[in-house]
Image 1 (cartoon, helix red, strand yellow):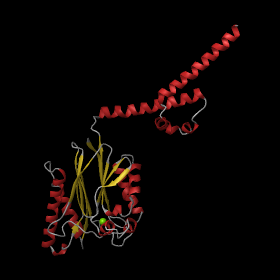
Image 2 (tube, protein in one colour; image 1 turned 45 degrees about the vertical axis):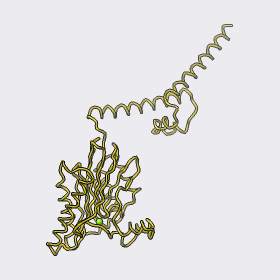
Image 3 (spheres, helix red, strand yellow; image 1 turned 60 degrees about the vertical axis):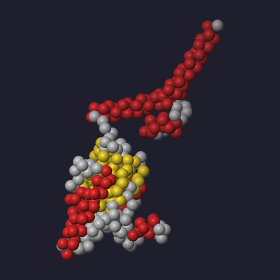
Image 4 (cartoon, helix red, strand yellow; image 1 turned 90 degrees about the vertical axis):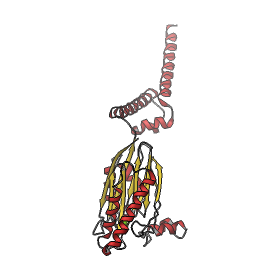
Length: 322
Ligand code: MG
């Protein structure tokens, strides 16, 4: 397996004057940080987090490796805030993903309310848990998820990087398969766009992650753009040489053409049957597989009809010559 394509986009949104989000899109490392604090402190905190993560090297591995990077980022932000009163109280979220393509795993490290998702077979799964006030209230049954979405305190986070001398990091590993799309985003996306719409926008971009990232930011802004919006997307692909990849595409195309040809011939030969399927030509290949007759079944039907016709002609012939 290998990392396919990757893209990162950040946008100030429609309401904020500055962008205090930062991101990393440097395969195999991806991350989003959403800074907070007065003046420019939020930008500084997010920038320090990103810089610390970028020090990852080939020896940085797995969930423990990502966790160590985040702990180091916390230390640097905290020290800076202590030294520089202008930045006192600054902090940032961080959600980082480190891909081990050979192992087929993605290590996630997470603090705050930025999120990591995995889109697999059209289903979007949130991999991280928000460290936010509303997430805790939902967890304890005080708020419903719907109430949390519109709660005035929904951006209040309960865990951040740099606000304390030490930090508890959620660090874990998830599996990756060819075709998976991973998304890391700030709450400027997740608060504006629900999961269902996120999934449909990414699917709609047909594996063009750069187009999908731009589209997600555009949707967040169309829904109000109340916060900075940051989106990092990458997909996983099968390990294939260029030649075999082209051959695989060609063979799929050939299969579809063959399936459609057989469908059309059978319809013409039978002159009846299965109008629902054949009314929709674009679905011909899919309906063939769904209904399970297959080219073999169709061929048998043609042969059967031809045999009946031949027997009929033979009978007619015998009738005439007698
Ligand atoms: Mg935010």
